[in-house]
Every structure is written in structure tokens, then in C-alpha cells.
Image (cartoon, rainbow, N blue to C red; front, top):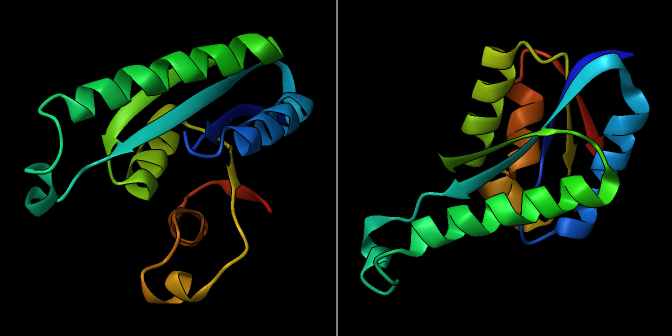
Length: 136
């Protein structure tokens, strides 16, 4: 069905990552490609004083290891990408630059905070230039 699928994984919700990766494998065309993506959010400068100097570097390495383990566990043969920045922006940038035809993203049940600041999945759905499948 799809030739290139972006699967963004929140390191705090690896179980959801497993679910959407399995769905991506089921929807992938023969010879297609899955891109497992994790985004390490930038930290506001007023908070950096309370964090270790290598916080971002450690978070990136942790994400790389967890994506590799997830990929290996599901034998997905995915390409893994870890970026630093705003999750929604980075996911959409990867999808556009890679020519993805589907993003599969996990979402949680919306609460009040979603209406005030907006969740990553909400932003991706509103602004992505390709199809988006939201797994609740």
C-alpha cells in the first residue's frame, strides 16, 4: 500500500512505538521503507541550568539505542533517524525531505492541555503534506 512510512516513536511510550511499527510493517509495499524517527525536544534555556551539561547528547544516544532495539525486536529493517528540535516540525521535515507517503503516529486521549498547547499528533495531522494515520 505505501512505499515510505514514517514511524515517530516517543521514548516515553515505547509500547505505543511497537504498536505503530507493527502497523507500518503491515501497510508497507514490498520493497518499501520504514523510517523509525525519534525527536529529542529542545530544552528551554531557563531550564538548562538544572540539567547536566550532556543532557541532550545522552538523550540522543538513548533514543538511538532504543530505536535499534525496537527495530531488531520487530525485524523491521527500518532506517533510524534521531533529531533534536520540535517533534512535530522535525517529523514533518523528514516526511517531506524523504518523500514519505504515510506517517503513522501514536496519540493519547486528548485532555485540556491539548486544547491549550496542542499535541504533536494534532500538529502533524494539521500540517503534514502526506497521509497521516493516528493510532489511539
